[in-house]
Every structure is written in C-alpha cells, then in structure tokens.
Image (cartoon, rainbow, N blue to C red):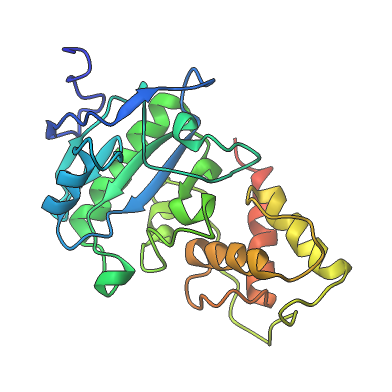
Length: 255
C-alpha cells in the first residue's frame, strides 16, 4: 500500500488513490499513452467519479486547469480508462497504456479551450512518462483514436500541434483544405480500400470492406479530430489523405 501511494512522477502534487485498478494483463510494461478530457462540469466531479468504486472508472493521472497534477493509480497497475478499443490490433488498451484525464467539460460543455498552464503541465507529464517507459511518439493517442465509434475526447480543440512541437506525440502540419470529398457515403471500390488500408497501417481499427461505410467515416472523423482539426466531417478529402500519408511516411524517420 505504501508503494502505491508514492507518485511515479516528480510533477505530481498529490496522490489521491483510486480503488479502481487491477493488474496489467499480458503486458510487463505500458507501451502507449492515452489522453482524455474528463467531460464533466467540474474537476471535482470528475475526481469523485474516478475514485468512486461504484463508477468503475479511473486513470493514472488527472491534470487540473491550473496545471496541478493528481496521480490516482500507480503506473505499474492497470487503470480503467480506455474501455473497448483497438490500436495496431491490440484490444486490451487498459493493460497496454497509461491514461491521463485532463479537466475539461468537452463537447457537452461547449468545447472550451484548454488553459495554457494545463497544457504545459500535460506536456511535461507526457514527456516524463514517455522518457521513463520509452513510449514511441506515434503511440501517444487520443481516446477517440482507439474508440472512434464511442469517443470524441480530448477533441478537436485539444492542441495536438503544440504537443507535437514540444516533443510529445507524432505530428505533421495538416495539409491545406482543398477540393471535395473523394467518396460518397457507401461508395465501394479499390480507392476506398486503399484509404482503409492506410488508416489500418497507421494503427486505427478499421475493417477492409472496400466500402465507405459508417465505421470508416467514424475512423476518418477520429483521425481528423487528432491530426486535421480545422474541419472534422468524416470525409476523406485530399487534405485528410495527404496528412495521413505524411504521418505514415514519417514513421520511418522516428527513432
């Protein structure tokens, strides 16, 4: 018990132990970092839920608007933040990841901007975690990346570009908006399958149906929230595909 209450990061202001955790299953160490917004009216309400055994949800860290950081679950343990999802074929993302909840009411609360102090703290924490566990930049993910049919957080107003420019995550500048969508809804053919293959290659859980179906649109929407936030509409346009290609091309350059 004493070991669990010792913060893993020197950036932590306090350890508020959550009972909602377990042992990692099949993973000796985390290999990815997943960012969330709390999606609740206040940080206090979020902290209460994250530490309430009846809620059965938690995260390793909670970052407040003023930049203060609480740790709720030891990094060696499996927090309950990711739920059902997939990335690179892995499905137990709770066991594979460290989760950071960022206090923000999210889409239901009008998608307010994240304060500078909060983002600076998130960057510092993510860099600290990434260095200690050797987490690859392309495995710093949004909750919406791993569960595009269910989740929208941390949302398109989250400044992924600022994180990328400060050494957190994989980022390229989005290709400029141009042209119309490549596909109509439910359009079928090899070009659709090619886009699905690119999304799957990067890591998204998308089926190779060759049809621009509902799931594919949801995955494209999740991609846009993270990597092309200027327009989030689920349409595979030239900007979206060019940005995706640049990210894939950049994977070989990451050491």
